[in-house]
Length: 181
Figure (spheres, rainbow, N blue to C red):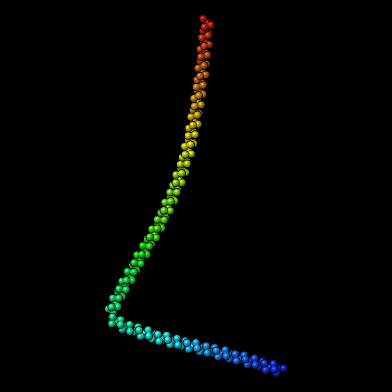
């Protein structure tokens, strides 16, 4: 039994080793493939660079030949760019102006509205105050008139009383005179 177990163990170990080896091999293979790919890519890049360089050289030669044309083109391009820039700037400026105007208008409108509201409120308050004052004044005047009337009536009464007294005195005097006669 022990031997059997040992054999089994050995087998397992072998299997494991095999597996490990396989894995290692796979890894190695993968690595190699990746390296190859990288190398290929590098080669391709180098080729591309070389091609680009060649193209650039050709272009330079052509440029030398067509320098005048290039100058013209450059000038044109510059002009175009300048024009574009100017246009853009103008547009931007215009937009800015518009925005500013709009903001100003809004602000002005708001201010006007506020002012109007304030004025209206003030006017209302003033009116109300004035009305109240007028009412008070009228009331005072009425009171004064009433007082004056009362005073006048009192004076009239006093005068009447005085007259009556005078009349009585005269009557008495007459009677005395008559008796004396």
